[in-house]
Image (cartoon, rainbow, N blue to C red):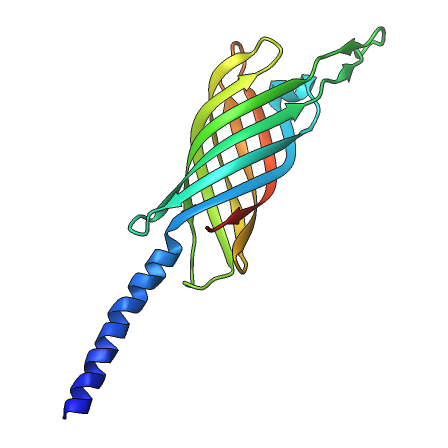
Length: 185
């Protein structure tokens, strides 16, 4: 009888500790870097070409919440274009624009299985964008989605977001398409 009670106590403790440990693994802090293509759209795409972007990320995932909080610091570029008038004549060259950014985002992961390797997510947030060429510091918002590939010791991800920076006149819009890695300390 004593062995049965000890066995039952061990089973009960394992069933209560395992979900807690699993929740703690899904929570925590990660650090990451990403890089990729920055595609201007709308009015910005008329005068700017596709450039590149680099970002650093810090993500906090409280185990008790369904969303993670991610902070990004980034550098995005868009080179100028040579624009030829439709009727011909002398072309117009535009100057390139560089952006430095600081954003706060919420991420919702669509985790089906607890040990899934392939996890899609949606991301959205806002922040400060500082554009060169007289644009200055403006507020912007972004929303998009991505996929995380959970690997041993780190995660790889790819994501795309539509970004709208509220500049004077028409807004500056771009789509950063990033590939990166996140490390769990």
